[in-house]
Every structure is written in C-alpha cells, then in structure tokens.
Length: 277
Image 1 (cartoon, rainbow, N blue to C red):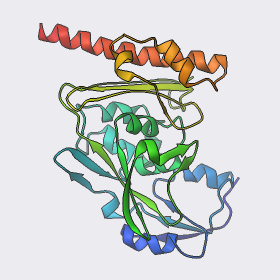
Image 2 (image 1 turned 60 degrees about the vertical axis):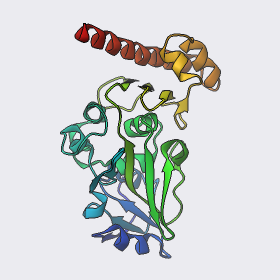
Image 3 (image 1 turned 90 degrees about the vertical axis):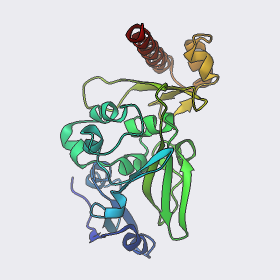
C-alpha cells in the first residue's frame, strides 16, 4: 500500500518545527521514518502534514554535563553503533545499537523516533528505561523533563501532548564499577524481541534495576532488584508475581530472558574478578 496524501514541511530548528505541529492541521514529526514510514504505508497513520526534523541541528547536538550526557533526539542508531557520539556508560551503547534491526535501518532510524514510537520490544525503549534515562520534551509551553519510566505509558503510548516533540535523551553517567546486561530473544537477527530483560547494578550511585520487557506494555521493574542481582531472590517467582497477565508460554520465555540477563551479569563479575586476580 501507499500512504494517504500529505504535505511535507522541512524544519531547520526545533523552534521552527513547533508552530507547524501545533497548527490546525493534523501533523506528525518525522526524522528517520523507520517507525512512522511503515505506519503511513499501511495507512494506520494518516496525518495531513509531516514536519521533517532530520535537518534540525539542535536535535542532533550532544551536550556533556558533569553527571550526564544529553543526546539529541535525531541522532541515529548507527552513530551510537559507530562511536560517533560520546558514551555516558562504560561502552554499553554501541552493543545495544548494533542489535537494532539491520544496518540500513540503523543508518536512518533515530533514538528519539524509537522512543516516541514506544514499541514495547524496541531496544532503546527497554534499555533507556533500565539505564535511568530521562526525556527532554519541547512544546508550545516550553521544555519539560520526564523519566523514561513515566514517559512510556503503555504499548505505543507516551506522555507526549499535542504539539510536543522529543528534543533529547538525558543519560546519567555510569561509574566505573557499574555493571550492565541486556538479553533478548528473537527468532532471527533484526526482529523485534519476543521477550527481553535488562539488569543494572551501579553501587556508586545506589541504583539497581531488573526490567522485564517486550511484554506488550511498558517495561516492568521487578521488585527487590538488588536481591535478584545478588542471588538472594528467585527470578522465576519475581517474574511470575510481576507479570501474571502473560500466558504461561510467554511467562516462561520471560523467566528465561531474566535469568539469562542475571547470569550474564554474574559472568561479567567473574571475568572482572579473574582479570584483577
């Protein structure tokens, strides 16, 4: 199928884009078009106007702060994969980006577009939530920041209000002692996950998270993550208690993903111990 007719307006800055998005016509922002494009072709989305953000220099900027890095929403997956932007973590962003779809998609797709689309199985949706990122939003009433855990409100659903866009993703810097693992199940390379889990342990910042994701809703934080990470709690029981709505088959897959993510963290610990011995 082909999309319904629409007009296209290029914008050079976010400020230039906002009046078009807040106008009387139904409008949507677009940058890489890897999420919105298929929806247009299937006519699931039929906006009258597309506002092209791909040339907005302010949406491609990287701002380094003392305790975080602010990544412009129009930065592509490939730029994270290739190390073209600084990494707020101990090298975790490139491997995350490398497993997103295919290189052709990564060349065009943007981190802001992925998060705005809010597919429950999307890699950035899961990992940015697990890493404690926040979303900087621009709109007619100015700027506001929301934690990822509050920004994604459900499957393909976010806290964006009419006329608003994602301007940037703020990712806290992780300490040298921080540990991280992300595991997902796909039938073949490039597909969205059927189940995924991520684990963060950053004792210097006092943060521990174990997230279950690709569950047809926003990622779910499992209770008592530090106990899970330290092996004092049963991950199977934690998943079953937190995700009672899953079918037995999907729950078993999620249990396995969570255990694999926790095991990967243990393997990293063992490697570090061996390297320092």
